[in-house]
Image (tube, rainbow, N blue to C red; front, side, top):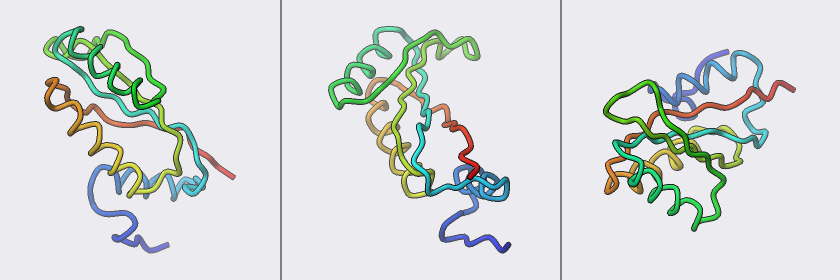
Amino acid sequence: MERDLTLFPSDNNGDALWQMLLDGDDLSQAREIEFSVIFPDQELALKFGQLLLENNQKLSFCSYQESEEYPWEITAYPEMPATYENLSAYQHLLETSSEPLKGKFDGWYCVSENK
């Protein structure tokens, strides 16, 4: 199978999706995808969480042990097909929305939908 760089560009999102496709994942299947944003303090993380809740987003809030500078994490759980366009658009939305609150995008994860 040859990689279509318009669907799977050469960046972190495109590389991850390409690997998922090679592993047999049906990327067109909607699934819950976890997007994490980390924050330097609890109050800023909670403000971001409130913003997501006001926009009907499912989320979790917890401490983040991987970073002393960013010890708080908000994870959003939208349901969508795992396409480059969807992942990149939601990531951009989180990055721009969290920037005023000193948030830092920390990646995404989803369970494989092998069909």
